[in-house]
Image 1: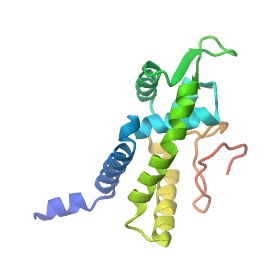
Image 2 (image 1 turned 30 degrees about the vertical axis):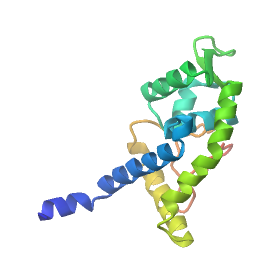
Image 3 (image 1 turned 90 degrees about the vertical axis):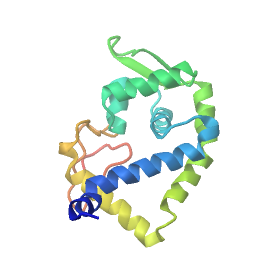
Image 4 (image 1 turned 90 degrees about the horizontal axis):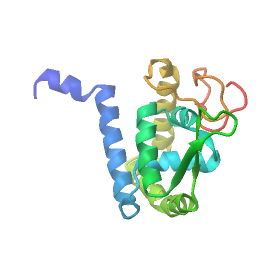
Length: 177
């Protein structure tokens, strides 16, 4: 193999993209019977925790751009899993909530999603799993400002950019790390 290909295949960007492809395939395989994608699962999970969240806030909570979150929401709405409408506090904003069918789908997806997570992490022992997650959190935290789409967990009023030693904010934050 030419050295230029070896260098390409050893680059973090290539490996992260490939790992993401594998992660998505493992998840989609586990959730095939439900017809659920990782993006849809993420949207449903955030909406369960934050009913009536604005569409823009939802995009930021998942690190999606507005076009991507709109595409995912339209698909979920067409299947009857979410509703979208004017927000109460500002009629120009769009509020999104789960339907009863969406709640049921999310409940049904918990075991397959956990199975997918375990399958994805199976090649690593517990220490390696923790190390991988810590390194990914460090990488994404340190380079968050480079992202094309902002990642702002619900109720955080700042872009996540923790100190090197601080964990990445992945849940509803009330204070800056």
